[in-house]
Amino acid sequence: MGAYWCSQAEVVTTEPKIVKNLILQIASKKNTTSVHNLEIKGNSIFFDSDGYGCFGVEWENYAKDLLFEKLFEKYTGALICFESVNQYQDLGYLFSSIWIKPEGEVNWDDDEEIDETFYKRTRVLWIEGDVSEQPCEGQFNEADIWYITFDYLEQNKEDMPSLYAAYRKAKVEGFDDWSISFIDKKKVISCEIAQQIGELYSDNQDAVLEECLENMRELNSYPIDAEYADFEFELPENFPKLSKL
Image (cartoon, rainbow, N blue to C red):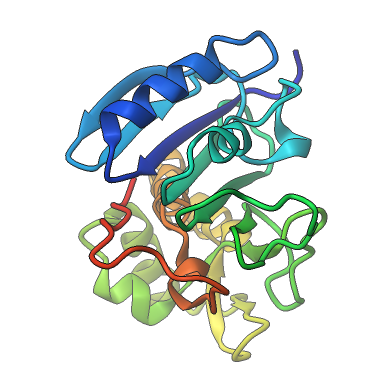
């Protein structure tokens, strides 16, 4: 089958029961990724792909049809659809997609990601890479290579105790081979550096790397770009917001 992707998805709507039934109808077709662990919580519908694909990125999907796209075609109300897609294998990256539509029908004739009837963006988060250079988007709209700053680690040391301990020991012993970030040219901790200091200054390199991966999954769990997007449309007043997966 190829790569194993696990998509965790959330669909926000003011009519969760109606939309839930539509999702089940769409997912029952053989050309669409199946849904698992589907449940309604308030105005959100949560489900996952159980490692069998994704719902909103065509080139990463095993099935012919995208569930998010089909849902936009069948439902005329406003929707927010988001998925955070994590690897089941060592594939080198994570990705996400966000789809938003106002009330009314979608006009697919305009092949832009942003138009008056829908908004769609995809984002890739590379696990490794040269953080001193601008990341490659490939087919995605946005791209990042994972790293954290020293200040971020200091502020979140309770969530990353193994990495923090290795970082502190590395500083004490004079380690200075840190990565340099592309954006502000500051010293940072990339995945490669975490592996290096984990091997040199920690008794549990696996724990150091798992904390890095968990942080990547957290960063991949919310569509940061959608908060600042300049939509060509408006959602209904007081429309419910997306939660953090």
